[in-house]
Image: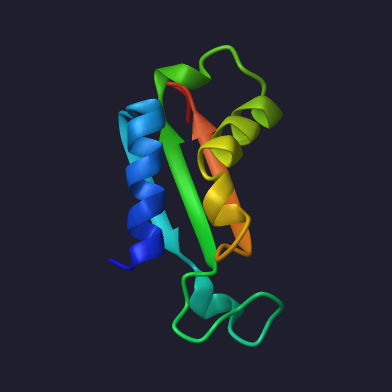
Length: 90
């Protein structure tokens, strides 16, 4: 697990106490594209299931995740795909 992926995982775990959290480094698929870096850890997919998202619209959920990861998004992370769900949603 890379340092940035680990930071994303730890911050989301701390902020939301998710029932499920999958963080995938998708950088290899974006090699040669804008924002890619040697060694990866620039493009990520996140699926998170947490009670904190219940009743919140999709955009609000994404903003909650972006706030929790503001430091990473301001620097090493070029792209972040977020699927944020409340328990029981699919």
